[in-house]
Length: 225
Image (cartoon, rainbow, N blue to C red; front, side, top):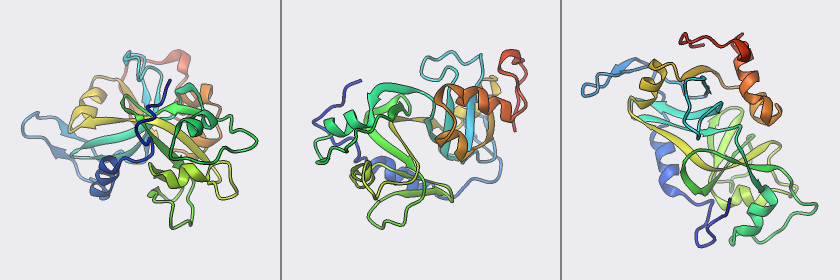
């Protein structure tokens, strides 16, 4: 995957404004009067786990961390699709980043979703750095699409845990609920350990096992945690 060097991959004020505008959870069930699709209670800070019925190549056997979900829609990041690009290579391609960490950072960059794949995001553990320009998602996790956090990677000021993604996933109002009604997703509360400590190739199976589901014996019945 190549990076468009004419754009700063960690500067997306439009996405940042969406996050800020959606800071309040939707805790009640709502109904979209036009589509007549029931909006379930907020799944913010949950994982979406793709079912076998979901064959879209962007989401097949994916685990998606939802950072926002309300009556207006949902936004999240796929956490188990590494691309053939290391963090070091991304830093080298980002013209706004001046330093090159030594030793090189061999962590993979992830495909966060099919939207804005020339934009970068960092999911990371909380930091007290007031210049990080990060959005607090929950007490364990922050998100940044600014150069501040990216520039700290490979230095003494980097977050304790982080993953870098290109792009994000988004659903319009009622769209995710429709997909769930089609038995395309299971849901569980997000777990920091799966994002940062579980090997990439095990994240889908490990998420299913948290539900007591054997990946080899998935049924066609819809389920929610």
